[in-house]
Length: 293
Ligand code: NAD
Image (tube, rainbow, N blue to C red; front, side, top):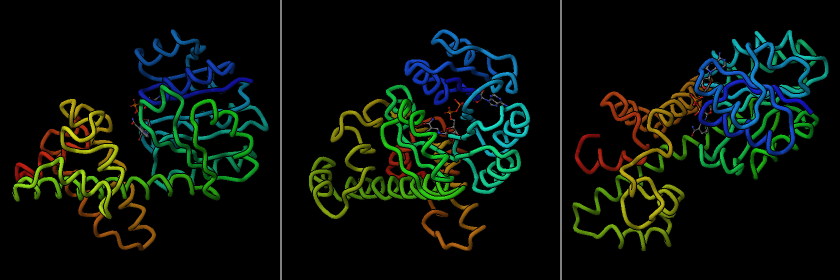
């Protein structure tokens, strides 16, 4: 089976290589030379254009920076895709672009899926990503072997756009909860409560959450968290800001009240403006502790 893979960056590169390892012929395209070379070294067959990458492919996957870029690429490749093929986007994009992409595919009679991921670059490399998919059951069933070669947890969330909706809602929880945990540690410092004591209590109490127990924003309690590594990402604050902005666009469009989502967006925007967008998003703790938030 042949897969056309467009967008061979930090996430798409290792995902494409996992498809190669699973025995698929992968025809890849990216606009950046370094991404092309890394993919080629791992067994991806390089294409000169996006349209060439999808030629003869049974399935096409895009993993791109934003909704507008994804839509442009889908417009380019859809006429070149063979009849009956499956097309899916694994990027994190706005709901509007996502729905437009589904419409483009439907107009050509192609099965389509939005299938964004959680799990970061580590998950992409280790093929342990979580996929949340939107589209028909038939499209999801067809995509399952491909998704299984790149991830370990697959959820069919509903019709077109449901995968992106799940991704946006999940990451809004994450952005808010990381700030909540950071605030609690900053307050504990001022109250003379040790970080380890707060961790020991909250990790076994009602304050327990992933931002505390897996990704603890202070050095010490969770040795694998970015706080122990100079807040090297991980998940960069600029990417968290991107996802929070998508949540606010979605909330405005749908008439949903998300006051904490709005506050989290403003705090990450300030962090980005201060030149800290490249730090891990858990470095928000330092900004709170230093009174810079
Ligand atoms: P990235 O910037 O490393 O990769 C994107 C790639 O797309 C780049 O290599 C770029 O050259 C390529 N590209 C851009 N325009 C193109 C075009 N017109 N044609 C072909 N290639 C093009 O980003 P990433 O970290 O791989 O993220 C990709 C997507 O996954 C984003 O939507 C991001 O929000 C999402 N995501 C990222 C993470 C993460 O931890 N990095 C986690 C979950 C989801």
